[in-house]
Length: 104
Image 1 (cartoon, rainbow, N blue to C red):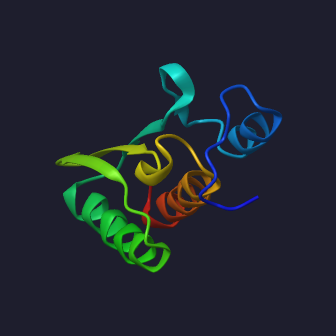
Image 2: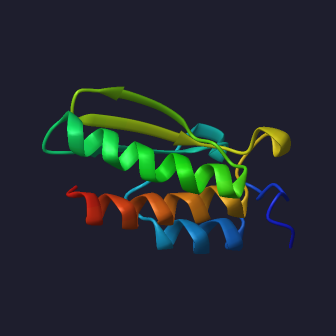
């Protein structure tokens, strides 16, 4: 399966990938996944975002995100596929790993 193929809502593959990032919330219609990261301070939040930005650029897959002080809210979806693809879950896993290293 291509990483840009849209995952069907309630498909076994979507459920399998979601189990790998259980703290990410599926939105209504399963068109995106969301998560809120909480850091110690702005510096940690910004460091997290900087690391993710570099990886997102390598992947050519960019998150929708919002930052206020020590909080980073993220929503992942693949615009070209109009929904979730394997790329979203790959980036979600990277973000979870990066958050652990950064101090989340």
